[in-house]
Length: 238
Ligand SMILES: [Zn+2]
Image 1 (cartoon, protein in one colour):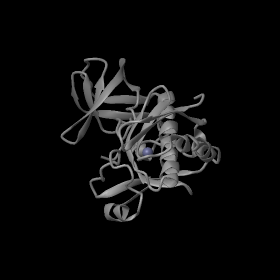
Image 2 (spheres, helix red, strand yellow; image 1 turned 135 degrees about the vertical axis):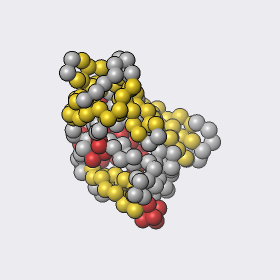
Image 3 (cartoon, protein in one colour; image 1 turned 90 degrees about the vertical axis):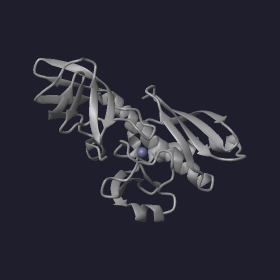
Image 4 (cartoon, helix red, strand yellow; image 1 turned 60 degrees about the horizontal axis):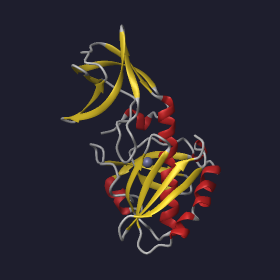
């Protein structure tokens, strides 16, 4: 599924229309929300119509169609306006982009270490797990400088689509198997590139450049099993 927000992450309000409705649930012709996935939390936001408004409480895919769940049992019809919570989206875009930087820096420093899991939190922290065996945690902790250098350099972030076979042939591109997005219906993979630093398949919303984010701190490093090293990171003063 290709989301509107992947191509237009800056568009936070959108006028659209209802194509199907049930009490407290609605399908829209288009919407600007990120529904969650790949470790990124779903957008927060609201829907308004002539005579009312309701918060979005969730997203559900049914028979390939995306339903928005509302904090009201209303049955909607006609024109509606979507509004994404701007601060929450900004936080997710910054944090998500920073996790690509962390991933790239660890991948380089530790000989192609793969990501095994990612989860971002609403408080500006996140965890990212790497398949690393017998690693000195001080070496990991020391990467904070390189991570923040990449943020300070304000490197451009770009998105492109490429053929699945081509993506599979490029070493390191499908890096995090647990979080890689499925191909689009026409067999394409979405690739997010941080200029000069990183290229990887991803379906989330990212910053326009790395300097969009405040500095990132490594808060904690935990050993989660023999092959799993967990980094807890947090935005510094978002
Ligand atoms: Zn991403």
